[in-house]
Length: 361
Image (cartoon, rainbow, N blue to C red; front, top):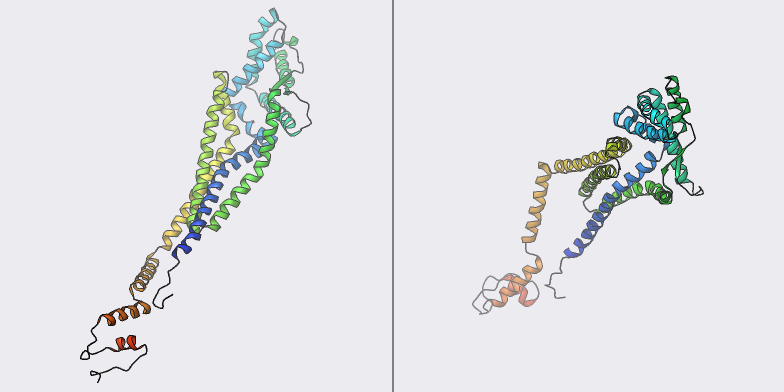
């Protein structure tokens, strides 16, 4: 390399690793954003819906809702009337049975029967989902306790033919046999996802923040992604409610189905709004911290650094000064009468010379 050549500055080599780190950080944070709503949904399904105590606690207040009482009264009343023998007894007792059932749903005893029936249904469904050795077939529940309570009230009110109401242990299918295997597989996947997906989301978010060159910006992006995940989860809950109500065969029972859906997804809605608020809080805190760091003193330091960098870029280097002096001396006249500067003499003779005042002899 010639002595006057200036080695190139490796700007591209310095920028490439930074760009790769930022790209990797963005990818990790985006994956964490996708796993946030999925992990919250899986955790809700396993720890809220699939837990008998939490499930019964969620549906326990529902008997106070009129739409739920009417839907249960219609279903139970029709079931009791179907158990009666065809003939005058059914025609005579049918309206009274339905009226008695509607009256029963407005008592405190109905709340007890409702809780017992839901606990029995939930235990039966969980047993079928968790026990792989369970016998194939539909998941059924016995509603005989509810029928017995209705019969007791009718007999106490001296209703005709009330003592003829059969209290048979009738098994009502709550999950068809064709769906048991599919639901069992889905429950196992949810059980595994409830643990691994939230853990993977946290690990990816932390790794993306640690890899990023500007960690404050990466943390702010992580907060926004978490908020986005919470918003997507809230949208999914709303869409699921609309689809669930659309699948209800009888439109008159859709209000009751909506009340039940809202009760079961209350924890999920709370989790979605919590994620949204937490993500926005983290992003706002990072933004305010960055603005505080850009105060007057920081601005003056930044301006000083930029001025120094600009001055260093404009100042000629020793190598460039030597090259410029060599070109000037080569272009200058070499007549004996013209004085020669010490710099040109140094360039021509190759060694420093004392300054010459007059012309050389």
